[in-house]
Image (cartoon, rainbow, N blue to C red; front, side, top):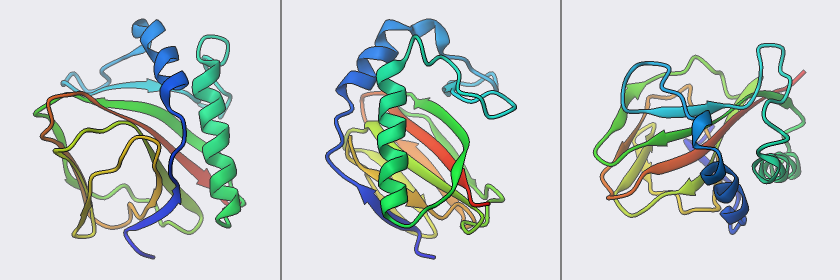
Length: 160
C-alpha cells in the first residue's frame, strides 16, 4: 500500500470549523501535552456530539462517502478531531493498523505551509479540504512548523 492515497480534495471545511469554534469546551488534552483532541465516537462506536457539531458530522459523512467511492466498504471505527499547535508535533511511530482490515484517513481542516505529515519517508503538506488514506502501518510523524494550529479530522474504517 502506498503511504498516501488521495480520496478527496476541495471539500468545504468552513462549516465544520464554525462548529468547532462555537464549542471550544470540547477540546481535551488526553496526554497532558500541547496536543488537543475532540473524540467523536464512544467506546461502543456511537456518534458523540452530533447535536452540537452537526456540520462537522456532515463532513465526516462526506469523507466516508468519498472513501466508499474509492473502494472502502468499511464502517466507522474511530473518529476524532486533532489539534497540533505551532511548533509542536507527533514523533515518528506506528499505529498498529494493517491498512487492510482497518484503514486510517486524515482530512485537513486547517493546515498552513510548514505543516509536514510524513508517512513511510514521503512527506506532504495537506491542504484544507484534502482527504487522504494514509498507511499508518508504516512509520509516520507530524510536525507543525507553521504559525497556526493544525486541525485535522482523523477517522478509521473497519472492513467486516
